[in-house]
Amino acid sequence: MEELKTHVCRIESEPTAHTVAIYAARAELMPFLFEGWMANDITPRGQLMTTIDVENFPSFLEGIMGVNFSRTPFEIFTDSKRVVADSFIVATKVVAKKLNFEGSKKFWNRGISAYVVCDGDAPIFREKVLTMIGGGDSAIEEANFLTKCGSKVYIIHRMNTFRAFKIMLSNALSNPNIEVIWNSIVEEAYGERVLDGLKVKNVATKEVSDLKATGVVFDYWT
Image (cartoon, rainbow, N blue to C red; front, side, top):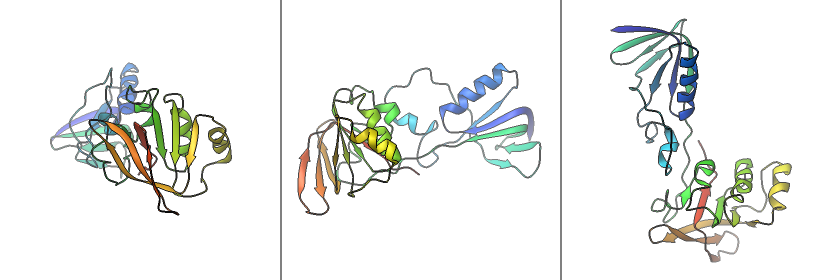
């Protein structure tokens, strides 16, 4: 088995690792970078690969088959190489928990997203009526962010209270472009080529209403 030695080695699934590798190379540390393949059914680079257009994107190396952290220097194994590294960086990705309702798969990346920073300012969201599903810190913070992108933001929350910090709530609830739909869940997403609207069900009254919105963001992560 071929052995390679380096000052720093990184396992990654997101573009940040490539940035770190570039800076490590600038410091002449000769870094090695290992890329996963189809982890959690997501292609290399993680969730960013499911967005629309990404510019200035670096390439990736072969996958990793094993790591030995029991001693230093660390050992990293593939099917053909053994890398010995003085330091080791692991940058694995998060994966969105996709809500399961009618149309949620059909309109994924066609109006439904879990990536506010990536997709919030995309043309499909820009100056449109948007919705955030969730009630935690991330949902409230990202709803505020979405008001910079869309013309109106609805927060759909299945409960009648939020779990988010009060300062975040204060910012959101005082924002004139945010409206909360309490005690509600999304029953269906509909449209032709892209998302045109949602069927929203009140869990208390069972009443289903129509919400014209061309963008939906989830606040569910694992």
